[in-house]
Image (cartoon, rainbow, N blue to C red; front, side, top):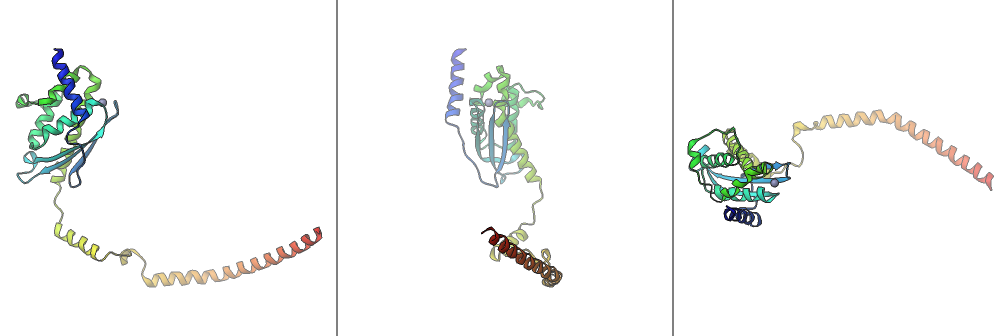
Length: 234
Ligand code: ZN
């Protein structure tokens, strides 16, 4: 059906020329980088999760931004993906990642029957890519990078929260009184500084006297020989 293929091409080119959700997010947003060496595509996914309604699968994608560069398939796929994921729960997002990868002919995924009902919207435009195995990696790059970002969110959630008030007060203290030098324990005590300095000075005394003597003798010899040779040349 050439008409449909034209439409798909239009959709892909539109997302490539005018990528949606392009940009960056500042920490604490999660960042993940993906690279496809076969084509030279780079995708960076920034993810900001809203966990007020719940963590894990119940967390919601409050914001998503895409960075990177590459071919039209990789960039348009990531653009469409960002549009489809904004405002979705992590559970929905994971289902969509599975659905898309299945559409791309990637096997070995946990088959979940309900995934088949998911409407990928504009992303259906990428189904023609399956005919070109080399480009499948281009189309899937953004999705794998998103999955990586979600894994990072999960491990960040799983990490036990640090004793925040103590850390904050320590930081405030260090801001108010910036330590100009490392803590006392990290450097030698004043007495050891003094003793090490004096001992080195004591041991240097005979050496410097000898050096002085040698330099004096040397300079006398040099000046004498210069006088003799210099004058003898005239
Ligand atoms: Zn590519």
